[in-house]
Length: 159
Image (cartoon, rainbow, N blue to C red; front, side, top):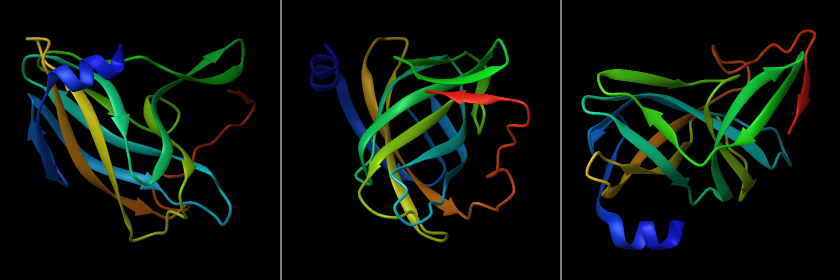
């Protein structure tokens, strides 16, 4: 079904670092850098929309698998799960951040080093149900960069 939606609905591709297309504005994109042999990382950014959109998929040539994920705490256990879509409300914004919504890049094809750029394409469904590909170049930050380190004191991770 996703394949049919993507093939039937893609109407354009925009490549920028901070983007406004498909009624989606993207600001402050970044990807957490990796250590040698690490096979997954997260991408973070702020999404906003005037009329409201849904992010219905993501891809990146830097990863074999790219998914939208959420993190929630249930009974003291932090759980990360893939999600089918992410709504960006009309006139509002959604922050993709460590410990919350994010783009998960798995089966990395190489290390993500500080100063490099990771291309990510978001599939955006507008109010008219058309899907548009919006691409953003997300700079990689070091593991110790501000906002790049999550604290998990007293929590256990489950995926």
